[in-house]
Amino acid sequence: MMPVASLEWFLMIAAFLFACGIYTILTRKNAVSVLMGVELVLNSANINLVAFARFVKPAASLGPQSVPIPMESGAAAVIYGAPWASGHVFAAFVIILAAAEAAVALGIILGIYRSMGGVDVDEVSALKG
Amino acid sequence: MILTLAAAGSSWADPAFWVFLAFAAMTVGSAVLVAATRNIVYSAYALLLTFFGVAGLYVFLDADFIAAAQVLVYIGGILVLILFGVMLTNRIHDIHLSNETTHPVTGAIIAGAVFLVLAYVALRTDWELDPRPAVPTSQEIGKAFMGKYLLAFEAASVLLLAALIGAAYLARRGEKE
Image 1 (cartoon, rainbow over the protein chains, first blue to last red):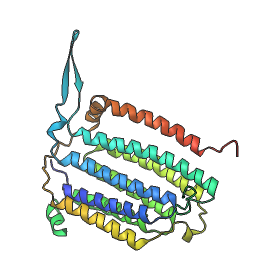
Image 2: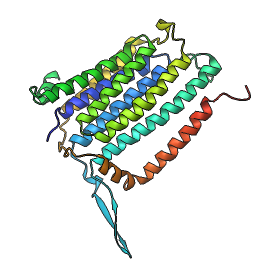
Image 3: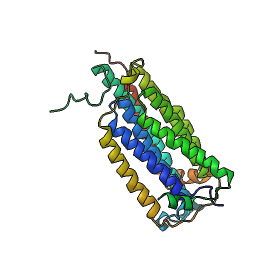
Protein backbone atom coordinates (compact mmCIF):
# COMPACT_ATOMS: atom_id res chain seq x y z
CA MET A 1 0.00 0.00 0.00
CA MET A 2 1.34 3.41 -0.92
CA PRO A 3 1.53 5.97 1.87
CA VAL A 4 -0.84 8.90 1.85
CA ALA A 5 1.74 11.38 0.57
CA SER A 6 4.47 11.03 -2.00
CA LEU A 7 8.23 11.19 -1.47
CA GLU A 8 8.44 14.76 -2.79
CA TRP A 9 6.21 16.07 0.00
CA PHE A 10 8.53 14.74 2.68
CA LEU A 11 11.63 15.98 0.88
CA MET A 12 10.16 19.46 0.56
CA ILE A 13 9.20 19.60 4.24
CA ALA A 14 12.70 18.42 5.17
CA ALA A 15 14.29 21.02 2.88
CA PHE A 16 12.21 23.74 4.51
CA LEU A 17 13.17 22.60 8.01
CA PHE A 18 16.82 22.56 6.90
CA ALA A 19 16.55 26.14 5.61
CA CYS A 20 14.89 27.28 8.86
CA GLY A 21 17.67 25.61 10.84
CA ILE A 22 20.38 27.24 8.71
CA TYR A 23 18.72 30.65 9.13
CA THR A 24 18.52 30.14 12.91
CA ILE A 25 22.17 29.09 13.14
CA LEU A 26 23.33 32.02 11.01
CA THR A 27 21.35 34.84 12.57
CA ARG A 28 20.96 34.11 16.28
CA LYS A 29 23.25 35.59 18.87
CA ASN A 30 22.11 33.40 21.74
CA ALA A 31 24.01 30.10 21.95
CA VAL A 32 20.92 28.18 23.05
CA SER A 33 19.08 29.42 19.95
CA VAL A 34 21.95 28.27 17.75
CA LEU A 35 21.58 24.85 19.37
CA MET A 36 17.87 24.87 18.43
CA GLY A 37 18.86 25.53 14.82
CA VAL A 38 21.21 22.55 14.89
CA GLU A 39 18.37 20.37 16.16
CA LEU A 40 16.17 21.53 13.27
CA VAL A 41 18.87 20.60 10.76
CA LEU A 42 19.33 17.15 12.34
CA ASN A 43 15.56 16.57 12.27
CA SER A 44 15.36 17.43 8.59
CA ALA A 45 18.18 15.01 7.77
CA ASN A 46 16.31 12.36 9.75
CA ILE A 47 13.10 12.93 7.79
CA ASN A 48 15.06 12.42 4.59
CA LEU A 49 16.62 9.17 5.83
CA VAL A 50 13.31 7.67 6.92
CA ALA A 51 11.52 8.87 3.76
CA PHE A 52 14.15 7.31 1.50
CA ALA A 53 13.95 4.09 3.52
CA ARG A 54 10.20 4.07 2.94
CA PHE A 55 10.09 4.93 -0.76
CA VAL A 56 13.33 4.34 -2.61
CA LYS A 57 14.69 1.01 -3.80
CA PRO A 58 17.54 -0.18 -1.55
CA ALA A 59 20.99 -0.28 -3.13
CA ALA A 60 22.23 -3.69 -4.17
CA SER A 61 25.32 -3.09 -2.04
CA LEU A 62 23.19 -3.35 1.09
CA GLY A 63 23.51 -7.07 0.54
CA PRO A 64 21.63 -10.15 1.59
CA GLN A 65 19.44 -10.34 4.66
CA SER A 66 21.65 -12.92 6.37
CA VAL A 67 25.05 -14.49 5.86
CA PRO A 68 25.56 -18.11 6.95
CA ILE A 69 28.58 -18.95 9.08
CA PRO A 70 29.91 -22.51 8.84
CA MET A 71 30.36 -23.90 12.35
CA GLU A 72 31.22 -27.34 13.65
CA SER A 73 28.17 -27.51 15.88
CA GLY A 74 25.65 -26.82 13.14
CA ALA A 75 24.52 -23.86 11.13
CA ALA A 76 24.59 -20.29 12.34
CA ALA A 77 24.01 -17.03 10.55
CA VAL A 78 24.71 -13.36 10.92
CA ILE A 79 21.29 -11.80 10.46
CA TYR A 80 21.36 -8.46 8.70
CA GLY A 81 17.71 -7.46 8.70
CA ALA A 82 15.79 -6.04 5.76
CA PRO A 83 17.73 -3.63 3.51
CA TRP A 84 15.43 -0.71 4.31
CA ALA A 85 16.22 -1.11 8.01
CA SER A 86 19.57 0.61 7.32
CA GLY A 87 17.78 3.94 6.89
CA HIS A 88 16.02 3.54 10.22
CA VAL A 89 19.26 2.51 11.93
CA PHE A 90 20.96 5.63 10.56
CA ALA A 91 18.06 7.76 11.83
CA ALA A 92 18.39 6.14 15.26
CA PHE A 93 22.13 6.94 15.27
CA VAL A 94 21.36 10.56 14.40
CA ILE A 95 18.95 10.71 17.36
CA ILE A 96 21.61 9.17 19.66
CA LEU A 97 24.24 11.67 18.49
CA ALA A 98 21.78 14.57 18.84
CA ALA A 99 21.13 13.59 22.44
CA ALA A 100 24.86 13.38 23.23
CA GLU A 101 25.53 16.66 21.42
CA ALA A 102 22.73 18.49 23.24
CA ALA A 103 23.97 17.31 26.65
CA VAL A 104 27.58 18.36 25.99
CA ALA A 105 26.56 21.64 24.33
CA LEU A 106 24.36 22.59 27.27
CA GLY A 107 27.23 21.81 29.65
CA ILE A 108 29.55 24.06 27.64
CA ILE A 109 26.94 26.83 27.45
CA LEU A 110 26.44 26.73 31.22
CA GLY A 111 30.21 26.90 31.70
CA ILE A 112 30.45 29.91 29.37
CA TYR A 113 27.59 31.61 31.20
CA ARG A 114 29.29 31.12 34.56
CA SER A 115 32.69 32.33 33.46
CA MET A 116 31.62 35.17 31.13
CA GLY A 117 28.20 36.18 32.39
CA GLY A 118 26.45 35.76 29.04
CA VAL A 119 25.80 33.34 26.20
CA ASP A 120 26.14 35.74 23.25
CA VAL A 121 28.18 33.86 20.64
CA ASP A 122 29.62 37.13 19.31
CA GLU A 123 31.16 38.00 22.65
CA VAL A 124 32.75 34.62 23.34
CA SER A 125 36.03 35.49 21.65
CA ALA A 126 38.58 35.11 24.43
CA LEU A 127 40.68 32.82 22.22
CA LYS A 128 40.79 35.30 19.34
CA GLY A 129 44.33 36.37 18.47
CA MET B 1 7.55 23.64 -8.66
CA ILE B 2 4.22 23.90 -6.83
CA LEU B 3 2.48 22.24 -9.76
CA THR B 4 4.88 19.30 -9.57
CA LEU B 5 4.18 18.94 -5.87
CA ALA B 6 0.41 19.10 -6.40
CA ALA B 7 0.60 16.48 -9.13
CA ALA B 8 2.84 14.30 -6.98
CA GLY B 9 0.39 14.49 -4.09
CA SER B 10 -1.98 11.63 -3.58
CA SER B 11 -5.75 11.78 -3.58
CA TRP B 12 -7.05 15.03 -2.17
CA ALA B 13 -10.25 13.17 -1.30
CA ASP B 14 -8.43 10.94 1.16
CA PRO B 15 -9.01 12.22 4.74
CA ALA B 16 -5.66 10.78 5.81
CA PHE B 17 -4.00 13.14 3.34
CA TRP B 18 -5.60 16.11 5.09
CA VAL B 19 -4.31 14.83 8.44
CA PHE B 20 -0.88 14.59 6.84
CA LEU B 21 -1.23 18.17 5.59
CA ALA B 22 -2.14 19.30 9.11
CA PHE B 23 1.01 17.68 10.52
CA ALA B 24 3.11 19.15 7.70
CA ALA B 25 1.66 22.62 8.32
CA MET B 26 2.32 22.28 12.06
CA THR B 27 5.94 21.26 11.43
CA VAL B 28 6.64 23.98 8.88
CA GLY B 29 4.80 26.74 10.74
CA SER B 30 6.46 26.09 14.07
CA ALA B 31 9.87 25.82 12.36
CA VAL B 32 9.29 29.34 11.00
CA LEU B 33 8.38 30.42 14.52
CA VAL B 34 11.61 28.93 15.90
CA ALA B 35 13.60 30.89 13.33
CA ALA B 36 11.68 34.16 13.58
CA THR B 37 10.24 34.80 17.02
CA ARG B 38 11.81 37.46 19.23
CA ASN B 39 11.36 35.65 22.53
CA ILE B 40 13.61 32.66 23.18
CA VAL B 41 10.99 30.95 25.38
CA TYR B 42 8.53 31.06 22.46
CA SER B 43 11.31 29.63 20.29
CA ALA B 44 11.75 26.69 22.66
CA TYR B 45 8.03 25.92 22.79
CA ALA B 46 7.74 26.22 19.00
CA LEU B 47 10.54 23.67 18.80
CA LEU B 48 8.32 21.34 20.85
CA LEU B 49 5.62 21.60 18.17
CA THR B 50 8.19 21.01 15.42
CA PHE B 51 9.46 17.84 17.08
CA PHE B 52 5.90 16.63 17.58
CA GLY B 53 5.04 17.32 13.94
CA VAL B 54 8.14 15.46 12.77
CA ALA B 55 7.07 12.48 14.93
CA GLY B 56 3.71 12.61 13.12
CA LEU B 57 5.49 12.62 9.76
CA TYR B 58 7.43 9.50 10.86
CA VAL B 59 4.08 7.81 11.56
CA PHE B 60 2.99 8.67 8.02
CA LEU B 61 6.22 7.07 6.79
CA ASP B 62 5.30 3.87 8.69
CA ALA B 63 8.36 4.26 10.94
CA ASP B 64 6.85 3.38 14.30
CA PHE B 65 10.12 2.84 16.19
CA ILE B 66 11.68 6.08 15.00
CA ALA B 67 8.47 7.99 15.81
CA ALA B 68 8.50 6.66 19.36
CA ALA B 69 12.22 7.42 19.70
CA GLN B 70 11.57 10.94 18.42
CA VAL B 71 8.93 11.56 21.08
CA LEU B 72 10.98 10.00 23.87
CA VAL B 73 14.42 11.40 23.07
CA TYR B 74 13.70 14.74 21.38
CA ILE B 75 10.64 15.88 23.29
CA GLY B 76 11.38 14.08 26.56
CA GLY B 77 15.12 14.66 26.62
CA ILE B 78 16.59 17.26 24.28
CA LEU B 79 13.76 19.76 24.57
CA VAL B 80 13.84 19.61 28.36
CA LEU B 81 17.62 20.15 28.20
CA ILE B 82 17.13 23.18 25.93
CA LEU B 83 14.45 24.60 28.24
CA PHE B 84 16.86 24.18 31.16
CA GLY B 85 19.48 26.00 29.10
CA VAL B 86 17.04 28.85 28.39
CA MET B 87 15.93 29.16 32.00
CA LEU B 88 19.44 28.97 33.47
CA THR B 89 21.20 31.37 31.12
CA ASN B 90 18.69 34.12 30.37
CA ARG B 91 17.10 36.92 32.18
CA ILE B 92 13.66 35.89 31.05
CA HIS B 93 12.03 39.21 31.93
CA ASP B 94 13.83 41.27 29.29
CA ILE B 95 11.80 39.64 26.56
CA HIS B 96 13.01 41.75 23.69
CA LEU B 97 16.69 41.23 24.31
CA SER B 98 16.58 37.50 24.95
CA ASN B 99 16.80 36.37 21.33
CA GLU B 100 18.62 38.96 19.25
CA THR B 101 19.34 38.36 15.60
CA THR B 102 22.21 39.63 13.52
CA HIS B 103 22.43 40.00 9.71
CA PRO B 104 18.87 38.77 9.04
CA VAL B 105 18.99 39.65 5.33
CA THR B 106 22.21 37.75 4.63
CA GLY B 107 20.92 34.81 6.64
CA ALA B 108 17.63 34.80 4.75
CA ILE B 109 19.43 34.90 1.39
CA ILE B 110 21.70 31.96 2.31
CA ALA B 111 18.85 29.93 3.80
CA GLY B 112 16.64 30.65 0.80
CA ALA B 113 19.41 29.57 -1.60
CA VAL B 114 19.88 26.33 0.39
CA PHE B 115 16.14 25.68 0.25
CA LEU B 116 15.95 26.33 -3.49
CA VAL B 117 18.85 23.97 -4.24
CA LEU B 118 17.40 21.20 -2.03
CA ALA B 119 13.91 21.65 -3.50
CA TYR B 120 15.28 21.60 -7.05
CA VAL B 121 17.14 18.35 -6.39
CA ALA B 122 14.13 16.79 -4.62
CA LEU B 123 11.69 17.61 -7.40
CA ARG B 124 13.87 17.10 -10.47
CA THR B 125 15.60 13.85 -9.56
CA ASP B 126 14.08 10.71 -11.01
CA TRP B 127 13.91 8.65 -7.82
CA GLU B 128 13.93 4.89 -8.27
CA LEU B 129 10.80 4.17 -6.29
CA ASP B 130 10.20 0.82 -4.64
CA PRO B 131 8.00 1.34 -1.56
CA ARG B 132 8.61 -1.20 1.17
CA PRO B 133 5.65 -2.95 2.76
CA ALA B 134 4.16 -1.10 5.72
CA VAL B 135 5.19 -3.66 8.32
CA PRO B 136 6.19 -3.04 11.96
CA THR B 137 9.81 -1.92 11.93
CA SER B 138 11.31 -2.72 15.31
CA GLN B 139 12.11 -6.38 14.51
CA GLU B 140 14.15 -5.55 11.40
CA ILE B 141 15.83 -2.59 13.15
CA GLY B 142 16.81 -4.91 15.99
CA LYS B 143 18.29 -7.43 13.55
CA ALA B 144 20.27 -4.69 11.80
CA PHE B 145 21.53 -3.25 15.11
CA MET B 146 22.60 -6.62 16.46
CA GLY B 147 24.04 -7.89 13.16
CA LYS B 148 25.35 -5.57 10.52
CA TYR B 149 25.76 -2.45 12.67
CA LEU B 150 26.88 -4.09 15.91
CA LEU B 151 30.25 -2.30 16.04
CA ALA B 152 28.66 1.10 15.40
CA PHE B 153 26.04 0.30 18.03
CA GLU B 154 28.70 -0.44 20.65
CA ALA B 155 30.64 2.69 19.64
CA ALA B 156 27.46 4.74 20.08
CA SER B 157 26.94 3.31 23.56
CA VAL B 158 30.51 4.22 24.53
CA LEU B 159 29.96 7.69 23.06
CA LEU B 160 26.79 8.14 25.12
CA LEU B 161 28.67 7.17 28.28
CA ALA B 162 31.49 9.58 27.44
CA ALA B 163 29.00 12.37 26.68
CA LEU B 164 27.21 11.73 29.96
CA ILE B 165 30.43 11.92 31.99
CA GLY B 166 31.67 14.91 29.99
CA ALA B 167 28.42 16.84 30.37
CA ALA B 168 28.32 16.17 34.11
CA TYR B 169 31.95 17.28 34.42
CA LEU B 170 31.42 20.44 32.36
CA ALA B 171 28.21 21.48 34.09
CA ARG B 172 29.25 20.98 37.70
CA ARG B 173 30.58 23.88 39.70
CA GLY B 174 34.36 23.83 39.94
CA GLU B 175 35.69 23.36 43.44
CA LYS B 176 38.74 25.54 42.97
CA GLU B 177 36.96 28.73 41.93
